[in-house]
Length: 235
Length: 391
Image (cartoon, rainbow over all chains, first blue to last red):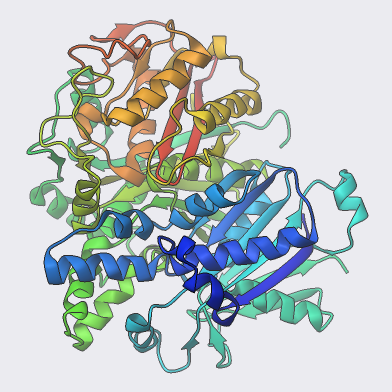
């Protein structure tokens, strides 16, 4: 089981200052978004050690585009764009900036990336607190391309969402914090297309928070791409 | 997990630059015969054609994939071969597929992204860019197999399939899945070849892991998948593993392998084994200066220099996310034959690496084998495979 203790949503507007900060010039937008969302979670609660699962549908799209753009126009492979293009570079970067991360996973699975991270956390034998972050950032050059690919129903945005879950029900931390307890998640395919709204592939947490705010405990979420996810929370 | 439950590896499927199937790779490892040419381990087109035919004629193929990417077909071939070898008769919703990959269907989209950056926005170009999302690999695997269970993807660079194997183990140990198919896949492309080249990590010579005169990495490609089942009578027991971050550097390992050591200690603790019970260590051993130095220090710090340590990347190259899965295949052959292949391409051992690196095949009782891997982003993963006492 996973007890949802704290959640944060970060938009591109929230990181305007950080993007302009020179100390972040070697970081991707994903990295800056991720640091922001984890920082906000850790402002609310102090953790001595925790696991981190970073979920992304597109990976480091901007860095990958920059790598290939340089390769195409100048036949030059730039090392910084390559190392930042790997899907887990955000995990690596964040681990240098924020202490106390133990287990690290970089999950990627299209529009069910966040749900994949939850599934991995539920199965994990670790009992440490786990922060699950969903993150995707679109460079302006590729936003329209991706919308053409995904079809007219989907309006894409960049952003991050993150939540802290506790696993060890015997711990003081678990007992002393209120939160909704997720007991199961089930994946189904072939659902109907969801209603149109702004999304990013790894924003599955936003669906969960919306349903919980409506006092649902057992609910189904239809994700873009055709997967439906069934959640079971303790009432 | 119920203490009497065991999780076993019951089937395998593999395609590597050494050829089709695990035996082809094993034969090359045992004879220390490198398949690297011009610094790369490339799967020949003729083998890709055979794999394509196998996939499209397999009873598991419910619809022919539209995307003809190497990564997809390496994955499908390995998955179908593993299921066949495990003698499964059907796939169920309670099964889970776990994949480790770095770049997914890379060569299906990288040229299109380059063309697009130069102004080509034809529909076909745009459609190819769809494949950039790693989730496409999972979508296409599900569709081809008509698979209704979960497909999970981890992308932790060179540690990806080593980590995936533990994630699959945990699917079974937590009883969130009844069976699992797990492995890794990688295809060579411009991103990885030019990217690693830009970091000055590649060599055009054959790589020499742990050698005094090592000059770098040989990239390679392929796929390897395994079936996992609970309480089977298979002789190969998989145990829980661990992943720990270095929090040190984006592309260089911690000089003393801080996270690597911690991962191994945790894996030993989770498996209930002592370091003295480890018969063999299959190291990451890429042939890069810093990797081998860090790994050598860390393994010596834990095990001293009495436990045999091998790297086989001098034979098959470094298949990045798929490397841990390739090497799990080799581990199964060691447990089956009780033969340890030589640590590949070793001529003159680095004097600063104080490990027992066999230069010729060793015979002996091999019971527990540790697999440990390092990756960019400071990701360190490890797991242990054991031969059942009564096997």
